[in-house]
Amino acid sequence: MKIGDKVSFLSEIGGGRVAGFQGKDIVLVEDEDGFQIPMPVSEVVVTSTGNDYSISKVVGAAAGKDGQRHDTQSDGMSIKARLSMGTDDNTDDNGEEDWEPADREVTFRPKAEERKGGNLLTCLLAFVPVDIKELTNTRFEAYFVNDSNYYVRYAVYSAEGSIWNLLYEGEAEPNTKAYLSEFGRESLNDLNRLCVQLYAFKRDKGFILKPAVDVQFRVDGVKFYKLHTFEENDYFEQPALLYTIVRDDKVPNSLVIDPKKLKQEMYNRKEDHSSNEEGRPSDSESTYVRRYDDGKSQKNLQKRDREAEVVDLHADAVLDTTAGMSSGDILNYQLDVFRRTLEKFKTVKGKRIIFIHGKGEGVLRHAIIHELNYRYKSYQYQDASFQEYGYGATQVTIK
Image 1: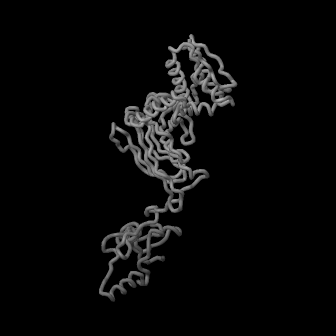
Image 2 (image 1 turned 180 degrees about the vertical axis):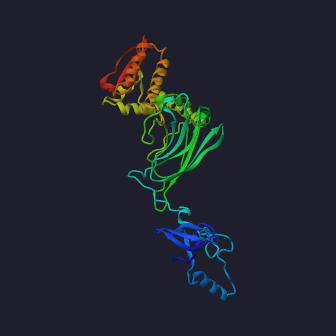
Image 3 (image 1 turned 120 degrees about the vertical axis):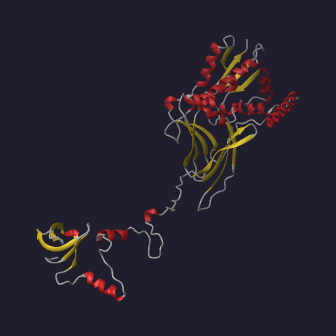
């Protein structure tokens, strides 16, 4: 660029001839009215040199061969504006839209991470209080926990009489938990009786086929008001109420009683009782003999059973399953069995009842002794015979 060259402005409309320079960064452009306009060198472009040889003439000559002529300033737009208009178009020469790579949908899905021991199917339904410190007013979040290396498709239903309604359905990835919903205590009636159906599979690899699971259970609404029912666990940072659907490929016994099956079981027990009167021991007596057999003859064992009523208070003896129950819930149920037994025989004077509670930490035994000292003061109690029952048994005599 030198004095006498014709120039145009990049960012503005207009131009002129170079009249001089101010330093090496400022050029003085003289317009048609004779005014000199200082402009940065980077903001002007030479359109014609002093000998009238310019790029515009070359372009004009080439365009003249085709009978066309292009006026660079005919629309009153600056060169920079013209250039920016060309870059704003997102279409290519074929008229197709030009996509940036970042705008494209991500279709890549990483392979699910598997853990050791995760090929045994374990799934749970979890209820987590939003604010454990305000248990009386807080809301709750429901989750489906998939503690396995399988993908799990699940559906959760609630019952209204004989009609079932779909509550949640979805797919849980391996070793993850799926958020279901948030609810308040006003919705507990909808959760009273639930059914969970699920099946498991793996993607992009072979796997051991798992049977479909269909489990029904009841959700005790009272537990949502008790702090001790929410326990520390491996799935959440805060305490949660957990209901096991399947654990290590094993489905727990259903907590929902089928009236037809109950009726049939009552008839079966009646038949067993008739058989016992003929001298054949029942299943419960046979189990007792196997568990507490001290080597004495069968005759002595039958004689001992006629004299004393034996009640096993171990959790696995009084409960079909402890799923969703805390240690406090189990203890309360064991004490309830203890009280019902004493009420049953309260009119049988001199009746001896042997309560098998186990040694353990002595929590159940201390609770039983407390009941006898304050609620059943007239009854006598002592440690049962070690030779016959081993450690962890208390004998109560009705007076």
